[in-house]
Image (cartoon, rainbow, N blue to C red; front, side, top):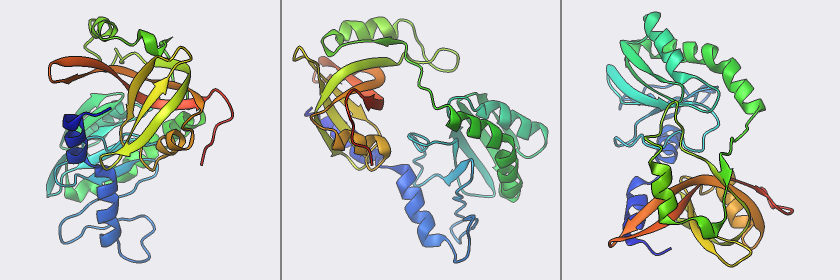
Length: 270
């Protein structure tokens, strides 16, 4: 896949979560197991269990929750901070945020099961953190025990055509209550995989009939999914993801946005 525009976009996006982690490591004082610290730059990046709460780094909070096993929130610094959060399947973040508003912990907030927005005063940050930990501990634990990925259908590489993407798009818009269809690509070989940009992995899946489809796993480099893709090049896997159209110089081509892979034969995992 040779797409200069995509490459530039991926490089510009970078990896906000890694940036936040790196900034936090330079600011954390010794003997601080919870990582609670407000720096002179008003850094309030905190690693929460079961919730991760980040400061937005250079205004880039998009994608912080991608690949995470717990809900995440990214907050702007300041006495009155605003932010947004993403959740995981089975954990209703929006409902929890609305409860926090009702209890006076937030100035305002709302959302739905998978995403929420908040506005709060810095002085309320510790109380909000404690509230999230208590409210979400049970749901997150349950979600981790049952990490099922629901599949809407199976498809082969040869069937991944722009017309199919257009047909699926007609059922949108997708979001809360109408999630984007997740498709399985059964028993396809990882013909090619490499890291791209600062945090992503792109790949090519090949079917038994020789048909291929290009794929990308965002923010997967160095993560379990990315390592599995790299370590299993040349092996057959079952892949799950969503279809998207990649437009370049007036042409359309299908891109498989990867969510996960599973073994179709003994698989290398580290």
